[in-house]
View 1 (cartoon, one colour):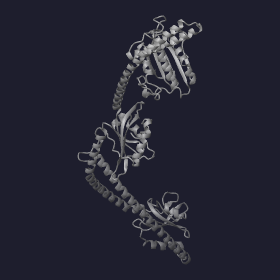
View 2: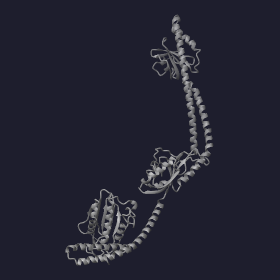
View 3: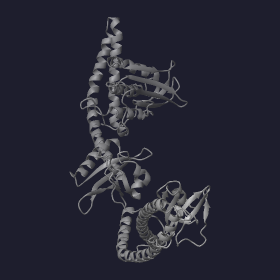
Length: 618
Protein backbone atom coordinates (compact mmCIF):
# COMPACT_ATOMS: atom_id res chain seq x y z
CA UNK A 1 0.00 0.00 0.00
CA UNK A 2 2.59 2.52 1.13
CA UNK A 3 6.31 2.10 1.66
CA UNK A 4 8.54 2.45 4.67
CA UNK A 5 9.42 6.05 5.30
CA UNK A 6 12.76 7.26 6.60
CA UNK A 7 11.40 8.64 9.90
CA UNK A 8 12.08 5.54 11.96
CA UNK A 9 8.92 6.14 14.05
CA UNK A 10 6.14 3.67 14.56
CA UNK A 11 3.02 5.68 15.28
CA UNK A 12 0.16 3.24 15.34
CA UNK A 13 -3.10 4.71 14.11
CA UNK A 14 -6.24 4.31 16.15
CA UNK A 15 -7.75 1.00 15.17
CA UNK A 16 -11.05 -0.71 15.85
CA UNK A 17 -11.09 -3.87 17.90
CA UNK A 18 -10.86 -7.09 15.87
CA UNK A 19 -14.16 -8.49 14.72
CA UNK A 20 -14.97 -12.00 15.87
CA UNK A 21 -17.47 -14.00 13.95
CA UNK A 22 -20.48 -15.50 15.69
CA UNK A 23 -22.05 -14.68 19.03
CA UNK A 24 -20.23 -13.96 22.28
CA UNK A 25 -20.67 -15.75 25.56
CA UNK A 26 -21.93 -13.29 28.14
CA UNK A 27 -23.02 -10.90 25.39
CA UNK A 28 -24.64 -7.64 26.40
CA UNK A 29 -28.38 -7.56 26.72
CA UNK A 30 -30.33 -5.33 24.33
CA UNK A 31 -29.88 -1.70 25.36
CA UNK A 32 -26.76 -2.44 27.42
CA UNK A 33 -23.19 -2.05 26.22
CA UNK A 34 -21.93 -4.38 28.99
CA UNK A 35 -22.97 -8.00 29.41
CA UNK A 36 -23.38 -9.82 32.71
CA UNK A 37 -19.77 -10.97 32.84
CA UNK A 38 -18.43 -7.52 32.00
CA UNK A 39 -20.58 -5.95 34.72
CA UNK A 40 -19.45 -8.49 37.31
CA UNK A 41 -15.81 -8.02 36.29
CA UNK A 42 -16.08 -4.25 36.58
CA UNK A 43 -17.76 -4.54 40.00
CA UNK A 44 -14.98 -6.85 41.19
CA UNK A 45 -12.38 -4.40 39.92
CA UNK A 46 -14.02 -1.51 41.79
CA UNK A 47 -14.36 -3.58 44.98
CA UNK A 48 -10.75 -4.73 44.70
CA UNK A 49 -9.57 -1.17 44.18
CA UNK A 50 -11.62 0.08 47.14
CA UNK A 51 -10.42 -2.74 49.38
CA UNK A 52 -6.86 -2.20 48.25
CA UNK A 53 -7.04 1.49 49.08
CA UNK A 54 -8.68 0.82 52.42
CA UNK A 55 -6.20 -1.91 53.27
CA UNK A 56 -3.29 0.32 52.37
CA UNK A 57 -4.66 3.12 54.57
CA UNK A 58 -5.28 0.77 57.49
CA UNK A 59 -1.82 -0.71 57.02
CA UNK A 60 -0.28 2.73 57.21
CA UNK A 61 -2.30 3.55 60.33
CA UNK A 62 -1.33 0.24 61.96
CA UNK A 63 2.31 0.88 61.16
CA UNK A 64 2.04 4.35 62.69
CA UNK A 65 0.35 2.90 65.80
CA UNK A 66 3.04 0.25 66.16
CA UNK A 67 5.74 2.89 65.84
CA UNK A 68 4.06 5.02 68.49
CA UNK A 69 3.60 2.02 70.80
CA UNK A 70 7.26 1.04 70.38
CA UNK A 71 8.35 4.53 71.38
CA UNK A 72 6.00 4.51 74.41
CA UNK A 73 7.17 1.12 75.65
CA UNK A 74 10.84 2.04 75.18
CA UNK A 75 10.31 5.29 77.08
CA UNK A 76 8.52 3.51 79.97
CA UNK A 77 11.14 0.76 80.12
CA UNK A 78 14.02 3.21 80.23
CA UNK A 79 12.38 5.50 82.82
CA UNK A 80 11.40 2.55 85.04
CA UNK A 81 14.88 1.07 84.70
CA UNK A 82 16.43 4.35 85.86
CA UNK A 83 13.95 4.60 88.75
CA UNK A 84 14.48 1.02 89.92
CA UNK A 85 18.25 1.48 89.61
CA UNK A 86 18.07 4.58 91.82
CA UNK A 87 15.93 2.76 94.42
CA UNK A 88 18.34 -0.18 94.40
CA UNK A 89 21.34 2.07 95.00
CA UNK A 90 19.49 3.82 97.87
CA UNK A 91 18.55 0.52 99.52
CA UNK A 92 22.09 -0.85 99.28
CA UNK A 93 23.21 2.22 101.25
CA UNK A 94 20.42 2.75 103.76
CA UNK A 95 18.39 -0.51 104.00
CA UNK A 96 21.06 -3.00 105.11
CA UNK A 97 18.97 -3.78 108.23
CA UNK A 98 15.94 -4.94 106.17
CA UNK A 99 15.11 -8.51 107.22
CA UNK A 100 15.70 -10.05 103.75
CA UNK A 101 18.41 -7.63 102.71
CA UNK A 102 18.62 -4.53 100.50
CA UNK A 103 17.42 -6.38 97.37
CA UNK A 104 14.25 -7.50 99.10
CA UNK A 105 13.66 -3.95 100.28
CA UNK A 106 13.99 -2.70 96.75
CA UNK A 107 11.63 -5.38 95.40
CA UNK A 108 9.04 -4.60 98.12
CA UNK A 109 9.03 -0.93 97.21
CA UNK A 110 8.66 -1.77 93.51
CA UNK A 111 5.69 -4.11 94.18
CA UNK A 112 3.98 -1.36 96.08
CA UNK A 113 4.61 1.13 93.24
CA UNK A 114 3.50 -1.27 90.46
CA UNK A 115 0.08 -1.48 92.03
CA UNK A 116 -0.50 2.04 90.78
CA UNK A 117 1.20 1.41 87.39
CA UNK A 118 -1.04 2.04 84.31
CA UNK A 119 -1.15 3.61 80.85
CA UNK A 120 -0.56 0.37 78.90
CA UNK A 121 -4.14 -0.74 78.28
CA UNK A 122 -5.80 -3.98 79.29
CA UNK A 123 -2.85 -6.31 78.66
CA UNK A 124 0.08 -4.04 79.58
CA UNK A 125 2.55 -5.42 82.15
CA UNK A 126 5.79 -4.52 83.86
CA UNK A 127 7.79 -7.67 84.59
CA UNK A 128 10.95 -8.17 86.69
CA UNK A 129 12.93 -11.41 86.67
CA UNK A 130 16.39 -12.79 87.31
CA UNK A 131 18.25 -15.87 86.13
CA UNK A 132 18.85 -18.73 88.49
CA UNK A 133 21.12 -21.25 86.81
CA UNK A 134 19.17 -22.52 83.74
CA UNK A 135 15.85 -20.95 84.63
CA UNK A 136 14.24 -17.55 84.54
CA UNK A 137 12.46 -16.77 87.81
CA UNK A 138 9.80 -14.09 87.76
CA UNK A 139 10.18 -11.57 90.59
CA UNK A 140 7.31 -9.26 89.74
CA UNK A 141 4.31 -9.15 87.46
CA UNK A 142 1.51 -6.63 87.75
CA UNK A 143 -2.18 -7.13 88.26
CA UNK A 144 -2.87 -7.70 84.52
CA UNK A 145 -1.00 -11.00 84.66
CA UNK A 146 -3.20 -14.11 84.25
CA UNK A 147 -3.93 -16.23 87.29
CA UNK A 148 -1.96 -19.22 85.96
CA UNK A 149 1.25 -17.22 85.51
CA UNK A 150 4.23 -19.58 85.99
CA UNK A 151 6.83 -18.65 88.63
CA UNK A 152 9.71 -19.62 86.32
CA UNK A 153 10.41 -20.81 82.77
CA UNK A 154 13.41 -22.69 81.34
CA UNK A 155 16.17 -20.48 79.93
CA UNK A 156 16.29 -22.46 76.63
CA UNK A 157 12.52 -22.55 76.01
CA UNK A 158 10.63 -20.55 73.40
CA UNK A 159 8.88 -18.60 76.13
CA UNK A 160 9.91 -15.30 77.75
CA UNK A 161 11.82 -14.11 74.70
CA UNK A 162 11.80 -10.44 75.79
CA UNK A 163 13.00 -11.27 79.33
CA UNK A 164 15.78 -13.50 77.98
CA UNK A 165 16.95 -10.52 75.88
CA UNK A 166 16.88 -8.22 78.98
CA UNK A 167 18.82 -10.70 81.12
CA UNK A 168 21.33 -11.03 78.24
CA UNK A 169 22.06 -7.29 78.50
CA UNK A 170 19.95 -6.10 75.52
CA UNK A 171 17.99 -2.87 75.65
CA UNK A 172 15.58 -2.84 72.72
CA UNK A 173 11.98 -3.21 71.47
CA UNK A 174 10.95 -6.55 69.96
CA UNK A 175 8.03 -8.80 69.11
CA UNK A 176 8.11 -12.24 70.71
CA UNK A 177 6.39 -14.64 73.07
CA UNK A 178 6.13 -13.79 76.78
CA UNK A 179 6.29 -16.17 79.75
CA UNK A 180 2.68 -17.32 79.02
CA UNK A 181 3.28 -17.89 75.29
CA UNK A 182 1.36 -14.79 74.08
CA UNK A 183 2.81 -12.70 71.22
CA UNK A 184 3.63 -9.32 72.65
CA UNK A 185 5.31 -6.06 71.74
CA UNK A 186 7.92 -5.55 74.48
CA UNK A 187 10.65 -3.12 75.50
CA UNK A 188 13.58 -4.60 77.46
CA UNK A 189 16.10 -3.03 79.82
CA UNK A 190 18.81 -4.80 81.86
CA UNK A 191 19.27 -3.90 85.60
CA UNK A 192 22.89 -4.93 85.85
CA UNK A 193 23.52 -3.59 89.38
CA UNK A 194 20.68 -5.79 90.69
CA UNK A 195 21.18 -8.74 88.28
CA UNK A 196 17.59 -8.36 87.11
CA UNK A 197 15.86 -7.84 83.77
CA UNK A 198 13.01 -5.42 83.14
CA UNK A 199 10.33 -5.96 80.46
CA UNK A 200 7.44 -3.61 79.66
CA UNK A 201 4.99 -5.33 77.26
CA UNK A 202 1.52 -5.26 75.72
CA UNK A 203 -0.31 -7.96 73.71
CA UNK A 204 -0.19 -7.57 69.89
CA UNK A 205 -3.82 -8.67 69.73
CA UNK A 206 -4.84 -5.63 71.81
CA UNK A 207 -2.90 -3.27 69.49
CA UNK A 208 -4.44 -4.79 66.35
CA UNK A 209 -8.00 -5.16 67.66
CA UNK A 210 -9.26 -1.64 66.75
CA UNK A 211 -7.76 -1.90 63.28
CA UNK A 212 -9.47 -5.25 62.65
CA UNK A 213 -12.81 -3.69 63.59
CA UNK A 214 -12.06 -0.72 61.32
CA UNK A 215 -11.11 -3.06 58.48
CA UNK A 216 -14.41 -4.94 58.74
CA UNK A 217 -16.35 -1.68 58.68
CA UNK A 218 -14.21 -0.40 55.78
CA UNK A 219 -14.85 -3.56 53.75
CA UNK A 220 -18.57 -3.12 54.10
CA UNK A 221 -18.39 0.55 53.16
CA UNK A 222 -16.05 -0.24 50.21
CA UNK A 223 -18.39 -2.89 48.82
CA UNK A 224 -21.36 -0.55 49.19
CA UNK A 225 -19.56 2.37 47.53
CA UNK A 226 -18.23 0.10 44.74
CA UNK A 227 -21.73 -1.13 44.03
CA UNK A 228 -23.11 2.41 43.94
CA UNK A 229 -20.19 3.56 41.77
CA UNK A 230 -20.65 0.66 39.35
CA UNK A 231 -24.37 1.35 39.05
CA UNK A 232 -23.71 5.04 38.32
CA UNK A 233 -20.96 4.13 35.84
CA UNK A 234 -23.23 1.74 33.93
CA UNK A 235 -26.06 4.27 33.96
CA UNK A 236 -23.83 6.99 32.47
CA UNK A 237 -21.68 4.95 30.10
CA UNK A 238 -24.23 2.47 28.68
CA UNK A 239 -25.76 4.97 26.21
CA UNK A 240 -22.32 6.26 25.19
CA UNK A 241 -20.89 2.80 24.69
CA UNK A 242 -24.00 1.69 22.82
CA UNK A 243 -23.57 4.54 20.35
CA UNK A 244 -19.86 3.75 20.08
CA UNK A 245 -20.58 0.07 19.40
CA UNK A 246 -23.11 1.01 16.71
CA UNK A 247 -20.61 3.35 15.09
CA UNK A 248 -17.90 0.70 15.23
CA UNK A 249 -20.21 -1.90 13.70
CA UNK A 250 -21.02 0.46 10.83
CA UNK A 251 -17.33 1.20 10.27
CA UNK A 252 -16.51 -2.50 10.43
CA UNK A 253 -19.16 -3.35 7.86
CA UNK A 254 -17.99 -0.56 5.56
CA UNK A 255 -14.32 -1.49 6.07
CA UNK A 256 -14.57 -5.26 5.74
CA UNK A 257 -17.16 -5.36 2.94
CA UNK A 258 -15.49 -2.68 0.80
CA UNK A 259 -14.93 -3.97 -2.77
CA UNK A 260 -11.44 -2.43 -2.84
CA UNK A 261 -8.46 -3.03 -0.57
CA UNK A 262 -8.31 -0.73 2.48
CA UNK A 263 -5.60 -0.50 5.15
CA UNK A 264 -4.76 1.67 8.13
CA UNK A 265 -1.03 2.29 8.01
CA UNK A 266 1.46 3.64 10.55
CA UNK A 267 4.01 6.32 9.75
CA UNK A 268 6.74 3.75 9.01
CA UNK A 269 4.56 1.90 6.50
CA UNK A 270 3.40 -1.07 8.59
CA UNK A 271 -0.21 -2.18 8.37
CA UNK A 272 -2.21 -1.78 11.57
CA UNK A 273 -5.44 -3.06 10.03
CA UNK A 274 -6.39 -4.49 6.63
CA UNK A 275 -9.61 -5.72 5.05
CA UNK A 276 -10.27 -8.98 3.24
CA UNK A 277 -10.19 -7.42 -0.23
CA UNK A 278 -6.63 -6.18 0.33
CA UNK A 279 -5.45 -9.48 1.78
CA UNK A 280 -6.91 -11.37 -1.18
CA UNK A 281 -5.40 -8.96 -3.70
CA UNK A 282 -1.90 -9.20 -2.23
CA UNK A 283 -2.11 -12.90 -1.35
CA UNK A 284 -1.14 -12.44 2.33
CA UNK A 285 -2.91 -12.78 5.67
CA UNK A 286 -3.28 -9.99 8.24
CA UNK A 287 -0.35 -11.08 10.43
CA UNK A 288 2.02 -11.21 7.44
CA UNK A 289 0.97 -7.73 6.31
CA UNK A 290 1.48 -6.39 9.85
CA UNK A 291 5.03 -7.74 9.98
CA UNK A 292 6.14 -6.60 6.53
CA UNK A 293 6.32 -3.03 5.29
CA UNK A 294 4.76 -2.20 1.95
CA UNK A 295 8.16 -1.33 0.54
CA UNK A 296 8.84 -5.06 0.70
CA UNK A 297 5.63 -5.78 -1.23
CA UNK A 298 6.20 -3.17 -3.93
CA UNK A 299 7.87 -3.73 -7.28
CA UNK A 300 11.43 -2.30 -7.06
CA UNK A 301 10.78 0.13 -9.92
CA UNK A 302 7.90 1.76 -7.98
CA UNK A 303 9.43 1.97 -4.48
CA UNK A 304 11.30 5.28 -4.85
CA UNK A 305 8.28 7.16 -6.23
CA UNK A 306 5.98 5.82 -3.55
CA UNK A 307 8.41 6.67 -0.73
CA UNK A 308 8.82 10.22 -2.03
CA UNK A 309 5.04 10.75 -2.12
CA UNK A 310 4.55 9.18 1.34
CA UNK A 311 7.22 11.33 2.95
CA UNK A 312 5.74 14.44 1.32
CA UNK A 313 2.33 13.44 2.72
CA UNK A 314 3.64 13.23 6.31
CA UNK A 315 5.67 16.40 5.86
CA UNK A 316 2.45 18.28 5.04
CA UNK A 317 3.38 19.01 1.42
CA UNK A 318 0.51 16.86 0.12
CA UNK A 319 -3.04 16.33 1.36
CA UNK A 320 -3.23 12.99 -0.48
CA UNK A 321 -1.74 11.26 -3.49
CA UNK A 322 -2.68 8.61 -6.06
CA UNK A 323 -0.57 6.46 -8.34
CA UNK A 324 -0.62 3.26 -10.36
CA UNK A 325 1.93 0.82 -8.96
CA UNK A 326 2.90 -2.82 -9.01
CA UNK A 327 2.89 -5.25 -6.09
CA UNK A 328 4.67 -8.59 -5.75
CA UNK A 329 2.62 -11.58 -4.59
CA UNK A 330 4.27 -14.50 -2.72
CA UNK A 331 4.21 -16.64 -5.90
CA UNK A 332 6.25 -13.99 -7.76
CA UNK A 333 3.36 -12.71 -9.88
CA UNK A 334 2.80 -8.96 -10.32
CA UNK A 335 -0.44 -7.21 -9.36
CA UNK A 336 -1.25 -3.77 -10.73
CA UNK A 337 -3.21 -1.49 -8.43
CA UNK A 338 -4.38 2.11 -8.30
CA UNK A 339 -3.32 3.45 -4.88
CA UNK A 340 -4.83 6.43 -3.07
CA UNK A 341 -3.35 7.50 0.30
CA UNK A 342 -4.49 10.20 2.74
CA UNK A 343 -3.79 11.04 6.38
CA UNK A 344 -6.27 10.53 9.22
CA UNK A 345 -6.31 13.39 11.77
CA UNK A 346 -7.86 13.95 15.19
CA UNK A 347 -9.94 16.96 16.22
CA UNK A 348 -6.81 19.05 16.76
CA UNK A 349 -5.42 18.25 13.31
CA UNK A 350 -2.71 15.85 14.53
CA UNK A 351 -1.97 12.96 12.19
CA UNK A 352 -3.06 9.59 13.61
CA UNK A 353 -2.00 7.47 10.66
CA UNK A 354 -2.64 6.97 6.98
CA UNK A 355 -5.48 5.24 5.19
CA UNK A 356 -4.65 3.59 1.89
CA UNK A 357 -7.15 2.37 -0.69
CA UNK A 358 -6.01 -0.04 -3.40
CA UNK A 359 -8.06 -0.86 -6.49
CA UNK A 360 -7.17 -3.86 -8.66
CA UNK A 361 -6.59 -2.47 -12.18
CA UNK A 362 -4.98 -5.57 -13.64
CA UNK A 363 -7.94 -6.43 -15.88
CA UNK A 364 -8.30 -2.83 -16.98
CA UNK A 365 -4.61 -2.66 -17.90
CA UNK A 366 -4.84 -5.95 -19.79
CA UNK A 367 -7.79 -4.65 -21.77
CA UNK A 368 -5.95 -1.40 -22.49
CA UNK A 369 -2.85 -3.34 -23.53
CA UNK A 370 -4.91 -5.54 -25.84
CA UNK A 371 -6.56 -2.45 -27.32
CA UNK A 372 -3.17 -0.78 -27.84
CA UNK A 373 -1.71 -3.89 -29.45
CA UNK A 374 -4.74 -4.23 -31.73
CA UNK A 375 -4.43 -0.59 -32.75
CA UNK A 376 -0.69 -0.97 -33.34
CA UNK A 377 -1.19 -4.09 -35.42
CA UNK A 378 -3.85 -2.39 -37.47
CA UNK A 379 -1.50 0.51 -38.13
CA UNK A 380 1.33 -1.89 -38.93
CA UNK A 381 -0.86 -3.88 -41.31
CA UNK A 382 -1.83 -0.65 -43.00
CA UNK A 383 1.85 0.30 -43.32
CA UNK A 384 2.70 -3.21 -44.53
CA UNK A 385 -0.01 -3.04 -47.16
CA UNK A 386 1.31 0.27 -48.42
CA UNK A 387 4.88 -1.03 -48.27
CA UNK A 388 3.89 -4.18 -50.16
CA UNK A 389 2.47 -2.11 -52.98
CA UNK A 390 5.53 0.15 -52.95
CA UNK A 391 8.04 -2.73 -52.77
CA UNK A 392 6.20 -4.66 -55.46
CA UNK A 393 6.56 -1.73 -57.82
CA UNK A 394 10.24 -1.30 -57.01
CA UNK A 395 10.88 -5.04 -57.41
CA UNK A 396 9.30 -5.04 -60.86
CA UNK A 397 11.47 -2.07 -61.82
CA UNK A 398 14.63 -3.82 -60.50
CA UNK A 399 13.94 -7.09 -62.33
CA UNK A 400 14.21 -5.57 -65.80
CA UNK A 401 17.77 -4.20 -65.29
CA UNK A 402 18.72 -7.50 -63.62
CA UNK A 403 17.58 -9.42 -66.68
CA UNK A 404 19.68 -7.15 -68.90
CA UNK A 405 22.69 -7.45 -66.59
CA UNK A 406 22.40 -11.24 -66.61
CA UNK A 407 22.23 -11.31 -70.42
CA UNK A 408 25.29 -9.06 -70.70
CA UNK A 409 27.26 -11.32 -68.34
CA UNK A 410 26.22 -14.37 -70.37
CA UNK A 411 27.26 -12.60 -73.59
CA UNK A 412 30.68 -11.65 -72.15
CA UNK A 413 31.15 -15.17 -70.86
CA UNK A 414 30.41 -16.65 -74.30
CA UNK A 415 32.92 -14.35 -76.05
CA UNK A 416 35.58 -14.22 -73.34
CA UNK A 417 39.02 -15.11 -74.61
CA UNK A 418 40.78 -15.17 -71.20
CA UNK A 419 39.74 -18.38 -69.49
CA UNK A 420 41.21 -17.12 -66.18
CA UNK A 421 38.36 -14.61 -65.84
CA UNK A 422 35.60 -17.14 -66.46
CA UNK A 423 35.18 -18.17 -62.77
CA UNK A 424 34.65 -14.54 -61.77
CA UNK A 425 31.89 -14.18 -64.34
CA UNK A 426 30.30 -17.38 -63.03
CA UNK A 427 30.31 -15.95 -59.51
CA UNK A 428 28.92 -12.65 -60.75
CA UNK A 429 26.14 -14.53 -62.53
CA UNK A 430 25.36 -16.44 -59.30
CA UNK A 431 25.10 -13.17 -57.36
CA UNK A 432 22.82 -11.66 -60.02
CA UNK A 433 20.59 -14.74 -59.77
CA UNK A 434 20.61 -14.48 -56.00
CA UNK A 435 19.49 -10.84 -56.23
CA UNK A 436 16.75 -12.00 -58.52
CA UNK A 437 15.62 -14.61 -56.04
CA UNK A 438 15.59 -12.02 -53.25
CA UNK A 439 13.49 -9.71 -55.39
CA UNK A 440 11.13 -12.61 -56.13
CA UNK A 441 10.98 -13.30 -52.40
CA UNK A 442 10.00 -9.68 -51.67
CA UNK A 443 7.35 -9.90 -54.34
CA UNK A 444 6.14 -13.16 -52.89
CA UNK A 445 5.95 -11.61 -49.38
CA UNK A 446 3.97 -8.71 -50.72
CA UNK A 447 1.67 -11.10 -52.61
CA UNK A 448 1.56 -13.65 -49.73
CA UNK A 449 3.03 -16.13 -52.25
CA UNK A 450 4.68 -19.44 -51.33
CA UNK A 451 8.31 -20.21 -52.22
CA UNK A 452 9.13 -23.55 -53.79
CA UNK A 453 10.73 -26.12 -51.47
CA UNK A 454 13.17 -28.92 -51.99
CA UNK A 455 15.98 -30.83 -50.32
CA UNK A 456 18.54 -28.47 -48.83
CA UNK A 457 21.76 -29.31 -46.97
CA UNK A 458 21.32 -27.22 -43.82
CA UNK A 459 25.00 -27.58 -42.83
CA UNK A 460 26.07 -26.08 -46.16
CA UNK A 461 23.67 -23.16 -45.74
CA UNK A 462 25.09 -22.45 -42.26
CA UNK A 463 28.68 -22.55 -43.53
CA UNK A 464 27.89 -20.21 -46.42
CA UNK A 465 26.10 -17.64 -44.26
CA UNK A 466 28.66 -17.71 -41.43
CA UNK A 467 31.40 -17.26 -44.02
CA UNK A 468 29.51 -14.27 -45.40
CA UNK A 469 29.46 -12.54 -41.95
CA UNK A 470 33.01 -13.58 -41.07
CA UNK A 471 34.44 -10.09 -41.53
CA UNK A 472 31.75 -8.62 -39.22
CA UNK A 473 32.54 -11.22 -36.57
CA UNK A 474 36.24 -10.47 -36.67
CA UNK A 475 35.74 -6.70 -36.72
CA UNK A 476 33.63 -6.90 -33.52
CA UNK A 477 35.81 -9.47 -31.73
CA UNK A 478 33.04 -12.09 -31.62
CA UNK A 479 33.78 -15.80 -31.20
CA UNK A 480 31.64 -18.12 -33.36
CA UNK A 481 30.98 -21.71 -32.29
CA UNK A 482 29.68 -23.80 -35.22
CA UNK A 483 28.38 -27.05 -33.72
CA UNK A 484 27.64 -28.79 -37.03
CA UNK A 485 27.62 -32.51 -37.85
CA UNK A 486 30.27 -33.69 -40.29
CA UNK A 487 27.70 -35.39 -42.51
CA UNK A 488 25.15 -33.34 -44.48
CA UNK A 489 21.87 -32.58 -42.72
CA UNK A 490 19.02 -32.48 -45.22
CA UNK A 491 15.80 -30.56 -44.67
CA UNK A 492 12.75 -29.70 -46.81
CA UNK A 493 13.04 -25.95 -47.28
CA UNK A 494 14.14 -23.16 -49.60
CA UNK A 495 17.80 -22.21 -49.66
CA UNK A 496 17.21 -18.51 -50.23
CA UNK A 497 14.65 -18.31 -47.41
CA UNK A 498 17.08 -20.07 -45.08
CA UNK A 499 19.94 -17.80 -46.17
CA UNK A 500 17.86 -14.71 -45.54
CA UNK A 501 16.55 -15.86 -42.12
CA UNK A 502 19.92 -17.06 -40.81
CA UNK A 503 21.70 -13.95 -42.07
CA UNK A 504 19.16 -11.72 -40.30
CA UNK A 505 19.53 -13.63 -37.02
CA UNK A 506 23.32 -13.50 -37.13
CA UNK A 507 23.39 -9.76 -37.92
CA UNK A 508 20.97 -9.09 -35.03
CA UNK A 509 23.22 -11.13 -32.69
CA UNK A 510 26.32 -9.23 -33.83
CA UNK A 511 24.63 -5.92 -33.13
CA UNK A 512 23.41 -7.10 -29.70
CA UNK A 513 26.97 -8.10 -28.68
CA UNK A 514 28.63 -4.76 -29.37
CA UNK A 515 28.46 -3.69 -25.71
CA UNK A 516 28.69 -7.17 -24.15
CA UNK A 517 31.49 -9.19 -22.63
CA UNK A 518 32.10 -12.01 -23.40
CA UNK A 519 31.05 -11.93 -27.05
CA UNK A 520 30.03 -15.34 -28.32
CA UNK A 521 27.59 -16.72 -30.91
CA UNK A 522 26.75 -20.38 -31.08
CA UNK A 523 25.08 -22.07 -34.07
CA UNK A 524 24.05 -25.69 -33.53
CA UNK A 525 22.10 -28.31 -35.51
CA UNK A 526 20.16 -31.04 -33.70
CA UNK A 527 18.50 -33.97 -35.44
CA UNK A 528 15.16 -35.42 -34.35
CA UNK A 529 13.18 -38.27 -35.92
CA UNK A 530 10.89 -36.05 -38.01
CA UNK A 531 12.55 -32.69 -37.92
CA UNK A 532 15.79 -30.77 -37.59
CA UNK A 533 16.43 -27.93 -35.11
CA UNK A 534 18.74 -25.02 -35.95
CA UNK A 535 19.69 -23.02 -32.83
CA UNK A 536 21.24 -19.53 -32.88
CA UNK A 537 22.20 -18.17 -29.43
CA UNK A 538 24.37 -15.33 -28.18
CA UNK A 539 25.85 -14.08 -24.90
CA UNK A 540 24.28 -10.62 -25.17
CA UNK A 541 21.74 -8.91 -22.89
CA UNK A 542 18.84 -11.04 -24.14
CA UNK A 543 15.27 -10.02 -24.92
CA UNK A 544 13.33 -8.30 -22.08
CA UNK A 545 10.12 -10.03 -21.01
CA UNK A 546 8.11 -6.91 -21.79
CA UNK A 547 8.82 -7.12 -25.55
CA UNK A 548 9.13 -10.88 -26.14
CA UNK A 549 5.61 -11.02 -27.61
CA UNK A 550 6.27 -8.18 -30.05
CA UNK A 551 9.68 -8.88 -31.57
CA UNK A 552 8.15 -10.65 -34.61
CA UNK A 553 5.67 -7.83 -35.26
CA UNK A 554 6.30 -5.85 -38.48
CA UNK A 555 8.03 -2.48 -37.91
CA UNK A 556 8.79 -3.25 -34.25
CA UNK A 557 12.45 -2.54 -33.47
CA UNK A 558 14.60 -1.74 -30.44
CA UNK A 559 17.43 -0.33 -32.56
CA UNK A 560 18.19 3.41 -32.61
CA UNK A 561 16.45 5.49 -35.31
CA UNK A 562 18.02 4.95 -38.71
CA UNK A 563 19.54 1.54 -37.83
CA UNK A 564 16.57 -0.73 -38.36
CA UNK A 565 13.18 -0.96 -40.09
CA UNK A 566 11.59 -3.55 -37.80
CA UNK A 567 11.01 -5.92 -40.75
CA UNK A 568 13.96 -8.33 -40.37
CA UNK A 569 12.51 -10.86 -37.92
CA UNK A 570 9.00 -10.44 -39.31
CA UNK A 571 10.14 -11.21 -42.88
CA UNK A 572 12.32 -14.10 -41.69
CA UNK A 573 9.45 -15.68 -39.72
CA UNK A 574 7.00 -15.14 -42.57
CA UNK A 575 9.43 -16.61 -45.13
CA UNK A 576 10.14 -19.69 -43.03
CA UNK A 577 6.43 -20.18 -42.47
CA UNK A 578 5.84 -20.31 -46.23
CA UNK A 579 8.26 -23.26 -46.55
CA UNK A 580 6.85 -25.22 -43.61
CA UNK A 581 9.41 -24.09 -41.03
CA UNK A 582 8.96 -22.28 -37.73
CA UNK A 583 11.02 -19.50 -36.11
CA UNK A 584 10.57 -18.99 -32.34
CA UNK A 585 12.31 -17.29 -29.42
CA UNK A 586 13.05 -19.76 -26.61
CA UNK A 587 14.55 -19.26 -23.12
CA UNK A 588 18.34 -19.25 -23.11
CA UNK A 589 20.29 -21.55 -20.80
CA UNK A 590 22.26 -18.59 -19.46
CA UNK A 591 22.06 -14.95 -20.46
CA UNK A 592 21.48 -13.71 -23.99
CA UNK A 593 18.91 -14.60 -26.63
CA UNK A 594 18.25 -17.96 -28.27
CA UNK A 595 16.27 -18.40 -31.49
CA UNK A 596 15.19 -21.79 -32.78
CA UNK A 597 14.29 -22.72 -36.38
CA UNK A 598 12.30 -25.97 -36.64
CA UNK A 599 12.50 -27.56 -40.11
CA UNK A 600 11.02 -30.75 -41.54
CA UNK A 601 13.68 -33.43 -42.12
CA UNK A 602 14.25 -34.72 -45.68
CA UNK A 603 16.02 -37.57 -47.46
CA UNK A 604 18.88 -36.68 -49.87
CA UNK A 605 17.94 -36.43 -53.54
CA UNK A 606 14.29 -35.50 -52.96
CA UNK A 607 13.31 -32.46 -55.08
CA UNK A 608 15.93 -29.94 -56.25
CA UNK A 609 18.80 -28.61 -54.23
CA UNK A 610 17.75 -24.98 -54.09
CA UNK A 611 14.03 -25.00 -53.72
CA UNK A 612 13.23 -22.11 -56.03
CA UNK A 613 15.41 -21.92 -59.22
CA UNK A 614 13.37 -19.33 -61.09
CA UNK A 615 15.33 -17.06 -63.45
CA UNK A 616 15.65 -13.46 -62.26
CA UNK A 617 13.97 -12.23 -65.32
CA UNK A 618 11.11 -14.69 -65.22
